[in-house]
Image 1 (cartoon, protein in one colour):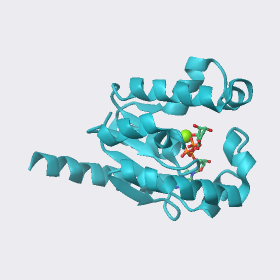
Image 2 (cartoon, helix red, strand yellow):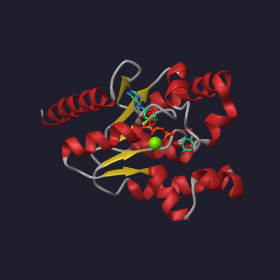
Image 3 (tube, rainbow, N blue to C red):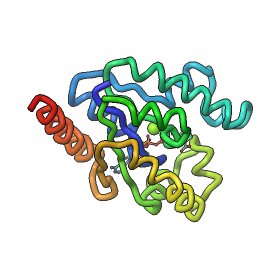
Image 4 (cartoon, rainbow, N blue to C red):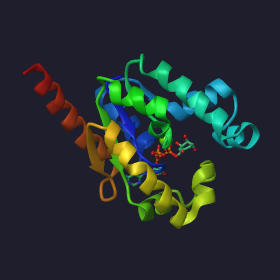
Length: 173
Ligand SMILES: Nc1ncnc2c1ncn2[C@@H]1O[C@H](COP(=O)(O)OP(=O)(O)OP(=O)(O)O)[C@@H](O)[C@H]1O
Ligand SMILES: O=C(O)C1=C[C@@H](O)[C@@H](O)[C@H](O)C1
Ligand SMILES: [Mg+2]
């Protein structure tokens, strides 16, 4: 992988990751999509029929596999929170980018979404609480952070691209 995107639900990992991969002419891989393909059902169905622990095991298996591929990887919102995933992300040489977002922006972006079981259950207070508990872990696994609230997805992709170029040139020095 050239870069891994982490961040809360609605931070734009899938949207920005797709644009960044297009810009660089490399494949985009989405961990949530890999899980859906391997399970043969939607995330909503996995949570409802098999429970969250089964989803988290599938997520870990998919992450291990994805780290060996080329391209840009968009993780799921909860991926870095599981200890085994946290350790993989901290240890990797691949640049990890945190897409940050305020809870009010998440609510606005996901207002018409029906596919994120956790976001539906939580509401604004629950989102603030869950994000507060996750933020340190997102920061600890990432090499740099982009605040996305006031940027378009294309602008976020451009900021990441510039940071990756700087990072690669620093590595060569
Ligand atoms: N910078 C942005 N500005 C405005 N809207 C955005 C931005 N980034 C993402 N969105 C919108 O927010 C919604 C959620 O984005 P996306 O699916 O990319 O988030 P995600 O981080 O992949 O979430 P998840 O962790 O649940 O997979 C989409 O409707 C997308 O178009
Ligand atoms: O924040 C989370 O825990 C999740 C985020 C989504 O990307 C999916 O991986 C799933 O809905 C769980
Ligand atoms: Mg996504």
